[in-house]
Length: 129
Image 1 (cartoon, rainbow, N blue to C red):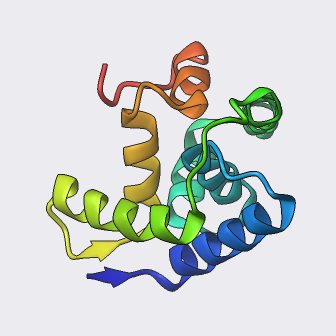
Image 2 (image 1 turned 30 degrees about the vertical axis):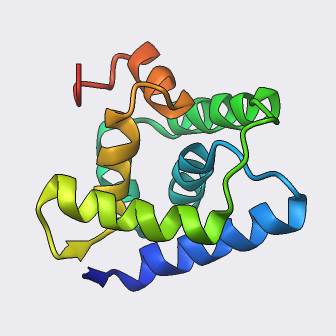
């Protein structure tokens, strides 16, 4: 499996931030938030083509709020989560090359993530519906 350098860097940062904060929950939404904040990702470029800056800002705020209200009892060790998560994306999407776009597709396809619910509220979610 080949992971893009940007996705690898974002996952490393999310893992570090999660461990530092002591919050080990809602990791897919944390990953989505990091992708939205990281300039120059393939996924972020695609989203920016279809959205205005204020819409991306609103979506980012809503995901942040969802993370703050999240279920603090849910516990997942980030390193273990992301190792199995990348394997799952590779298998589900039948690809050997993983990028931020693959992660976004998976996050939005998961109806249990705050991200997919927020994108759907904005009428932007057609994946998995």
